[in-house]
Length: 400
Image (tube, rainbow, N blue to C red; front, side):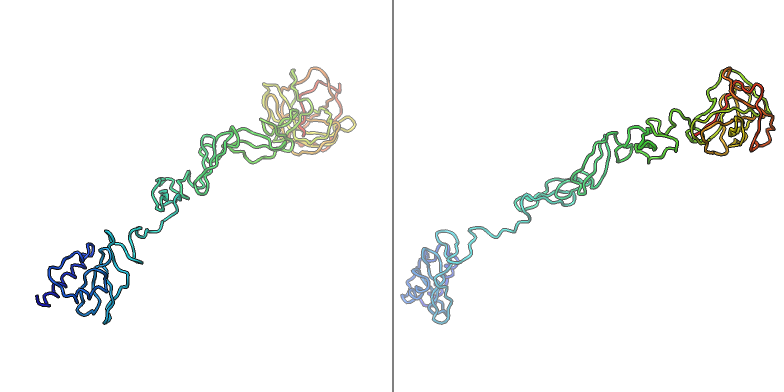
């Protein structure tokens, strides 16, 4: 066969060797005789297999390697490529790198983890849990409360509520709430506990101040009047021995207990009755008790100091007042301080009327004609009548 045909055939076998490295091109038989010089030319490049002489490569070529694998090697006289002893070999069945190659046998490069397993985070209203380095949805908290610090909120942050006798305050992150028991329940429609049990109840913060329960809260303390004391449940009130008159606690001094008998005073005549003041006091007013069915009349009243057993110097007086049956109390136009001693109380009716009078225990009294329209004189000299005593009328003073 001509040399050109041989080269063409060997070229074809070499290409097949490249394509069939997995089975080794040394297993492909030659069906023609090969010149010895050509067979020896590739032995220095690949080992014991057959070789192909590169037309332009000199001594290099492809040869069968080792245990059936293909190797590219050999030295080139004119600058050919040499791989040394390394190369691609199939070993006994698969593709494996030689010394220093990259092998897929132990697996490829894995992506880095996104998170540390076991951690949680919030994404909108969803709680996500880190599992094997990857975030996964764990729980939907809903839009009403939402998610915070890797957990569903237990309540609205900083919200305050009072329900079923418990007041609760939510934490700033919404994760917990503090509850306080309400001794008197919750304020209706409010967020706080009731401070007091019943609206209208009063209590005494001090002996002279009072406060009341209104809408579940205590009002600010209010000072009692100077003559009052605070007591529960009445609040500020007068001591048992006193009664309220013109907003002040006063004591009745004189003939203030109603008598059981009928008496009469005449219009245009002033009646003076003496009473004793056992302690210092301040004058507030005057009292005069008529019979229950007495007609209404106008009166004026006054107080004189006692000198030598009779009325002398004017101390205070009332304005003109209209009165009716039973008890009548009239304010003094001034409130002078009174010292211990005897005083004369005067009543001047404009017209005659029926009054209560005692039947026993006569007391000193004096009477004198006086015009109702004229003021009480600053000093008086009223002689005693004959006899100088009579059963007293219900005339008295109001003093602090």
